Image (cartoon, chains in turn red, purple):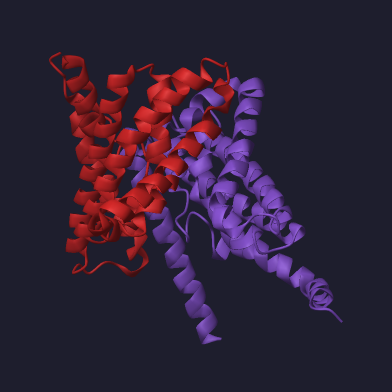
Length: 194
Length: 219
């Protein structure tokens, strides 16, 4: 149990997927203009990552390793993720249309979000068991939500700031992300008591 | 004359100018990193040394060129409904090839690039070029487009890694180039440094482009 809490805190704060591991930078920069859309994207990612972690772990353990096809990992994982996103999209459209329309185009974009494939690969390379895999996938998603919402709040404030011409647009966002990342470095000194 | 023949003739006459503008767009005016902001993850993550940066640049260029060629050849065969899935399968296959070659011949580079090699699959540049260029164009322009965008990516990642290695370690290609008294700025090679250096670089690019545009306007 303590082990799972350690994995979770480490994935959310100490090695935040976006700000420390540089995964999922595209949606992080692209979908962080408004807090609401950022939150929607964050929750969609949490859900997809949790399910994708579980599925890719099963594929890796019961298909790829059984048949000694580990070198097909990349192809198999991306296929699972693409199919999963498609499936979630169809399911939401049918059963929960309100959530579906609020997520809109962000849902298909998750296929090419490298956090999802990244967490699947990390789970395997770290040798996590099934439960640890699910917890890690979920926590990594929460870390993504935290980072993207924080950046969205900063960006909403920056709308009113007078920014020097060359820095307008993406450069100032990158610098804000850099400062955010500096503050997250503070968590590296965090010594988990277990 | 059939429509197709007309197209071929038009392509032939406009060929050289067209190819040149594809190259200019890919490397400079529509640089995938500095302008289109695609595929930033790998640029930020592994640009701590020049060798890593160049290795990544070459790997991405390889995948980009071959995925463009294959998708351009198959462009009339792939049904449009499942095109994205088909592109991803082609790209994932190529990335697996790159991964295996790199592990066999350059194990230390493969070690330091780590999971960012398989993550080339979800690099948006490659899918973007497949969707917006290779699926609509003939093989030769697609090949040139792949090379040009790959070069644009490599130039950008090279610039970022040059700054980060020089100020973060005081070395270039692993050789010490800074004077003895230089104390490395650790922040530059830590994660925040990636954001700050790339932000500064894009600001510099925008500053240069604004100057260039003003100069052209005055003429």
